[in-house]
Amino acid sequence: MAIGYQKLVGFMPRRNILLPTLCIVLLIAAWTFRSPRPSIDTWLDTASARGAASSRPSSLRPPDQAHNDVDLSAPDAPFVGWPLRRVCDEATWVQGLVYICDNNSGGIGNIRNYIQTCIRYGLEAGATGLVMPKIRKRNETDLADLFTDYLPFNYMFDEKHFRDAFAINCPQITLYDDIKDIPGVGSKPKIEHITPKKFGNREGCDFKDQNRHTDRFGDRFRKWLSDPKNGQTPPTRDHPRLIRFNWGVLWDWQTYRDGPEFANTFGNILRFNDQLLRLGKKTLERMHAYAEVNGVEDGRFLGIHLRTESDALSFWPTYTIQTEAYLKQATKRGFEVAYIATGDPLEAENFAGAAIEMAQMRVVSKADLLEDEDLEELESLSWDQQGLIDFIVLLGSDFFVGTMPSSFSVYMAMKRHLRTGGLYTRPYKVGTEGDGLSYLVGNYEKYWEGWLFMWDGMWP
Image (cartoon, rainbow, N blue to C red):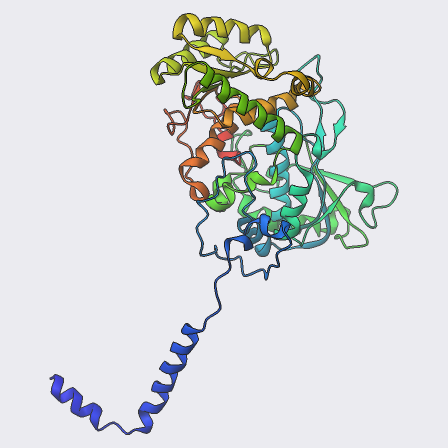
């Protein structure tokens, strides 16, 4: 059979094989001299910060390089921008549509989620304008009062880092310093208030349920935007429409819907400002030194979030429940020293005494570790800003214990969890012993009453 086939080919006219041969040669040449693949600097904002040129390759697919050499759990991790760029390249943009994301209050877990949820909806809606987010300051004497003055973005976050992330990866959006800076807004801007979940048929849904219509939100919102029955004309560059969310829109977007690449990187648009990073790193260095002085050669320490301040809700784990759970983990894992984060100095003192008695473990706080001008700088910070110093130190701990349903503890556990898989980290297994990096004590029996929905709606 093979010989017969060779004879058949031998009788093939020469002009019939010329064209296939030429095509093969051209394909080999094209493969040999193909353009080099873009470097990882194309996808990280660090390259652009150095002034490197970018050709903006297509972002509808991920780059060929792996990003697991980037520690996304670090408080100053670089922003991996291609997942955001992909979302922006797929968006349907609406000229004159501006989102105002300033209904942000509470602790760091809540504030981040308010801002990010608003921006994510804005991307889906096609907003071509975004007013720089502001932050509501907490009342220092009444921690439950979250609605005092509006403070600028850099009260907590790095504004240049935020602006660079959008300028490099989502240039379709213009960032405005203030509402009055929006072209065509006039002297009395009209701001429309919406709740995103209402742009969908929620018949049969629990009122607390997350938005199950995020895939269709953009189309439905734009249809509403252009419907004359709403008494407004569609937005244009000269006649913008301003959108602000009603208060309370958080944990609303199921983050896994965008894939792990976006879910695990979007949080890094909100990086702590330089002052907080510097002071937090200094405190972490002092903590490692303290551990070594007390006989722990590698500076190993346990990170503790004791959530018992005056604004803690009645159904949260009590001081006793938290203390017993934390010291059990400390004994189980052999920790000799610990760092405690709490806004209640008296409870911190009580816990330190219990730790010595029950686990033979020394416990210190940021105020114990810092001195001189560093301590003065710490004391000049607000209650929530000091909490961010705690956050940076706890990120650097060898094991973390916190409480469910504190959004601070949940954010901490999710951020630390990024060490397990980097860009492609899978979701944290809620209500279990976790990933070997964190443990949160709490009630995991009921999804809504136990606030477990936070895990599905938070970007680490």
